[in-house]
Amino acid sequence: MRRALGWAGGRLRGPEASVSGRMCSGGGGGDGADRRFPLAGRVAVITGSTDGIGLAVARRLGRDGAHVVLSSRQQENVTRAVASLQAEGLSVSGTVCHIGKTEDRERLVAKHSGGVDFLVCVAGVNPLVRSTWEASEQIWDKILDVNVKSPALLLGLLVPHMEKRGYGPRGWSVQWGGGCRIIPGSELLGPYNVSKTAILGLTKTLALELKPKGIRVNCLAPGLIKTNFSQVVRIDIMIFIKPPPSLCPRTGKPEDCAGVVSFLCSPDAGYITGETIVVAGGSPRL
Ligand code: NAP
Image (cartoon, rainbow, N blue to C red; front, side):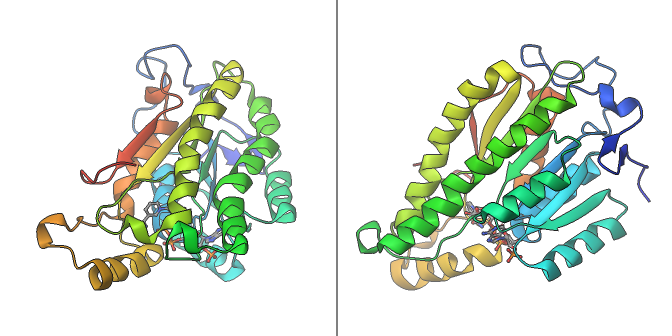
């Protein structure tokens, strides 16, 4: 088993609560934080976290000491992922939450009203692998709803609970799964690309708006990461674009994203907000 963590029934206990990330200081060194567990005593809510990038992020934040709240649409996926991380000795709970459903977002927040330090929004959809001008109104609505509007609404619900934590200098942070252009092949991802680019603007806007509350907002922009989600894209790139090997983007692993998210949550990133970090093996950016 890993160490016992400070999360119990929605309340924090123990000295881990003094860990902090000051907005205007030079990081977490020398603040009494246990460097082996930089997120000890913190609570992280992660959407879309029962598989792929979200699960890798959950595992990493758990290993770094946080209590992690997993969520996704399917109860069986939540049950499986929670059991798997608990078997690794991590402090994990889980809730069904379809990010696009109002009642699911409200239930997720109600269950964790004791306080949340980090919101990591990973859930996203891409129901169309075609061009922007071919997309129907329904496709546009679904993509913008799930990828852009719903994470912002979830954050809106969680901000009062983040404020409740109220210990020491506040350094909460939010990460979004932002977009990064993969060449060749990004032309197959029309509205999806637009939605992910919108997240870059959302990050900048929210960072300014939430700065007075000490809440940091940053964005992770992954390149092509080997998951179920990207399988269709990877196949389409090979079939339709037939890129020369020199232009084929190397696929990353979900774990390639996880450490960056943990860093952005940590006191070491206490002076970083409104930024997008690209994890894409050198792929060009939008
Ligand atoms: P993945 O391996 O397919 O995992 C997706 C996860 O999200 C699963 O846990 C799934 O579980 C959950 N999920 C799907 N729709 C959801 C919804 N509406 N509400 C809540 N949970 C939902 O996908 P991934 O590759 O890790 O992608 C995750 C995110 O990274 C997406 O936003 C994607 O746009 C972004 N991204 C991925 C890549 C890449 O190359 N893989 C690159 C850039 C950005 P359930 O089925 O139980 O809901």
